[in-house]
Image 1: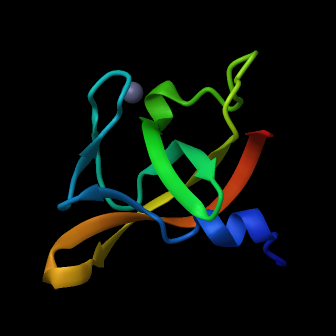
Image 2: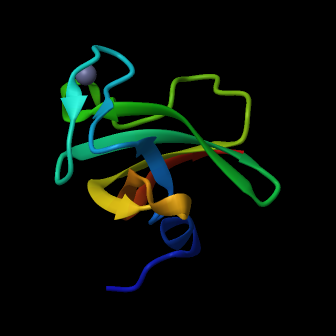
Length: 101
Ligand SMILES: [Zn+2]
């Protein structure tokens, strides 16, 4: 499988601190191996996760009329160790499923 540039950029981005994060829509706990959908804002070379949604609330596409450059990516949560030795969750095996420029 060949990864596109966008897929490579969103794979490994930190999604949350600790072992659990939450669906921003319904607050459900999301753990490693759960499938998630994240909205990332693109600002030059900066990529910021602005919204994390679980399978529970995944939409599969960006909202109509999205104005800011952003991508919608889907992947799996994976536990990882961040700078300073703190555990965190990253997005693994991500693919960009929708985008707005
Ligand atoms: Zn949810």
